[in-house]
Length: 463
Ligand SMILES: Cc1cc2nc3c(=O)[nH]c(=O)nc-3n(C[C@H](O)[C@H](O)[C@H](O)COP(=O)(O)OP(=O)(O)OC[C@H]3O[C@@H](n4cnc5c(N)ncnc54)[C@H](O)[C@@H]3O)c2cc1C
Ligand code: SF4
Ligand code: SF4
Image 1: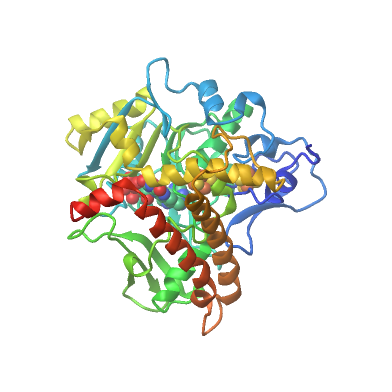
Image 2: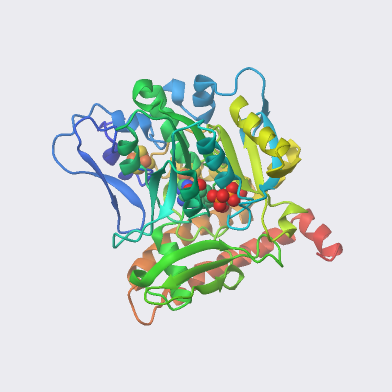
């Protein structure tokens, strides 16, 4: 089955690359380079003819369609790295864990996306010299086609620059190369697929990669291509080459956590322009500007990280516009750091149950796991190559659900296709072009809701 032993042929050409960037620094012949492609996501390409097909790149790729049995899925990798030790809880939805909390960091919450736990934790690790430096994300508009990048930070005071969620592609190649130049220990924050890639690299070549001693995963409902930012900015009169200071989660502290805005500052202007996300409609459930790879990813929380941080989308926490974090620790060290933060009164946290943690990500789970079983079956039928998954392939019995998953895939493709066509036009036909599929999706989603018991219970309660 396998013809070529590199990621370009096996991953990129099968439309499975998510653009994490880790394949580049493991290439022994320096043949791979990473670029932002025409669809607004990163991908590797082969720059010279020196690829020796040793397959190092494939071994670290989170979307390798042909992994070895011992690293087949997150389950096997988790057993192999065994970061939890012997005593841990387990959830089918978010993997092994030591503790579950919802809460916030008193000092950083306001400037953060959720409860500010990520910024607090990275600062704590630097201040207490648990790590020498952290690998995190910052704004950088010095290159024409890039708004954010990864950066190594060793001064805790600089970490405020890195807080807040960036719904934007950010790749690791450059920073991982840099991290290997000095003999230092690092903490790294990233999406679940990036953490998986780091774990695969550590399994494959421990000596080279064990300098990353702590990993933080943010929960993920899917990546957004750079087109997402362009699309939002266009709604407030800012062209692609005029975007600076994008913020994706501007809080409305007088409202609920879900009522946030996008903002960016047009080049040459002082004040940000604001776009309440409720004016744009559902960008997440519909799959706008999402890479195909994300539809074949079943790790919503970062099961292989020391700690996972997300949003607490359950009452009463989701009613608080100041934001709360869902916190899942998976190692003894991570659990201890959170306990210390609570004891030192820097963190305000409630212990939550496994079911509460699940409910706070239920929508994400349904699309990623239930939808995946269906997408896998379709991929098999269409003879498409996809990586092995834990989720079983089945055709959905519910025809409405099946239609919804199919339409979401179509929105993904059409949003990218039409935006590419329309992004530089004065009068964009994007909304007109995508409206037929969007209307169909809205129709079937409504129909699906009508058949749900929960919908009627909420209606009867007047919510
Ligand atoms: C693409 C994407 C999808 C997400 N989907 C979900 C979801 O479905 N459900 C959910 O509960 N949470 C999701 N999140 C995570 C959530 O938005 C918050 O980032 C998370 O709760 C951390 O909040 P905080 O207040 O603790 O972080 P803050 O203290 O604000 O710090 C944010 C930290 O995240 C890092 N970061 C931000 N953007 C990126 C990025 N693109 N790649 C790597 N690191 C980054 C920053 O470097 C910083 O360290 C998503 C985040 C992203 C980037
Ligand atoms: S997913 Fe990451 S490792 Fe795999 S090909 Fe893409 S950039 Fe490389
Ligand atoms: S959905 Fe999965 S593959 Fe896509 S960005 Fe998130 S973690 Fe990575």
